Length: 304
Image (cartoon, rainbow, N blue to C red; front, side):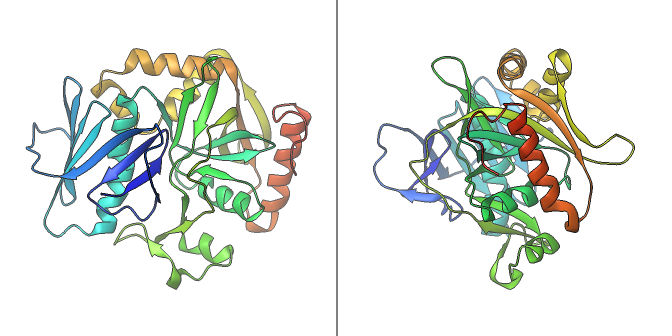
């Protein structure tokens, strides 16, 4: 079975995962096995837990048994396409596994600017993936899109691990960036949303996290960059957790709160409301980077 680089481990998978980079020897990284097999339904809820094992049931797609952050067994429903399966395998099922491994998944992308990671979060349609595509085209490394996996280094500082090397764009956003959607793969059979591969390095090291920024649209709230502190910063991180409903189901409330407090204490947590429209997008992003540099959030030598 091939091994694929992902976060701080390797996925050894019976199911092909073309979104990820296939690598050779494990090189000291933990191996997570993904295999096909029978998975019995355990109850009426979409996620059920028994000790360190969780079962995710998605009718029409598959049942996923995720065990102790070490393996995922996939029982595929008849008629489910490979792309639909991978969307949920590398989404919700992987999110459960990451929680089990004691990491903090944020519903965000992460971009390297000036040698540090900046994570952008916000509601669906807030422009996270469009931002990631813009930064990639501008020469910045995009560590991950959609799910930003945060851990702590040996000194307790938050770091971001590389994730899936692609962004998911709606058709209009893809075309705006000059891509012919006829040459891109849909992320789901029934969605007009496409995945765009990004430059990636299987040996990419985790990057120190400098800021988490929630995106908003200028309107009722005055535009600009506003820093949150204390309880407000922790609440933002808790609300922007990837699949937050999993926290209580998996019994991770205490650990999750600890992650949010640690991140809020070490990095800048901000809200950015901007003017909306393709014609002002680039100017708004460049203004954001300038403000982050002036606030010394990016450190010395930040890139414009």
